[in-house]
Image (cartoon, rainbow, N blue to C red):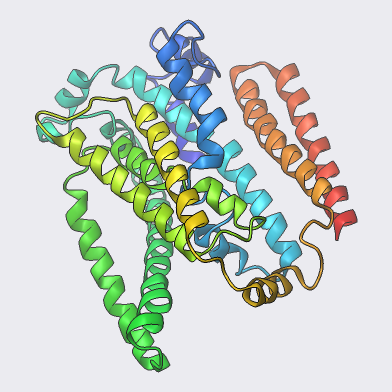
Length: 379
């Protein structure tokens, strides 16, 4: 936030008011896509709201829960703290954190309105590096020595947090779900630690090699979404439909990965077999993967009833999983609306629409109070 305030105060920007009134920025301020632009409407609004949120697994935004967010929840003192920590994360991650990014992005349109100017300012960049992703790095060159050090430290900390999560997570799969289960069922803790270390290094090397084939942050984002396309519904239903078994999850992960790999290789080919926009690739992946894991679920042997019962007793503490279910759904809806209200509240305050911004903030506060009461009554 400090760095963003400094950037906005640069003479070239002239403050927040001048930034928002600049000719390169004015047409970029709308909260919603142009409803006359069908492609933007489908890509930015319809697909995310109608398909993506429930059908696609993505690190940190996992329908039905997952290992990524679970690592944070398990670090909390108890279930109550874990619940509020996740709620706070969603407000901070989706409502607060985007605005410094957005403001810096808008400022970059003033300082570097096109790629030609960006390339001229940094002539040492290769052709492969001259893209939109460079704008944020270029904006950092305007920061003074002390501040840029703080920003770099924060970026390194964020990077290491994400990387350590991914590596620990991937290594745990290799050790617990593959090595200890199939290769060495009687492995000692020392052997497991050793395998974990080797698998961590192997994952780092493979990721580094694969990165050479990725051209931009957008490529990475689209690939991650495509890999998770179609798995989200399974991760939600597995809590309620006991017919879902490990084969269902394996099928979903394999099918979605194969489809993602096909579209990725196809997109890099000189003569692609098919030419589709990323949002249609995502939709196709969701449909094929969902059909695939449902078929595998119905054809494969269900998990033992004793295993399911033991799991339910462990997770739900001998209570019905549907206890307070209606209140939890209402809390989920209120939480989602509260995050959006906070997001648009901050945006409107930044844009100078104080009445609307404060009104939305009041709505978000009311929703949080209602969530607190609902959770308290449920527990």
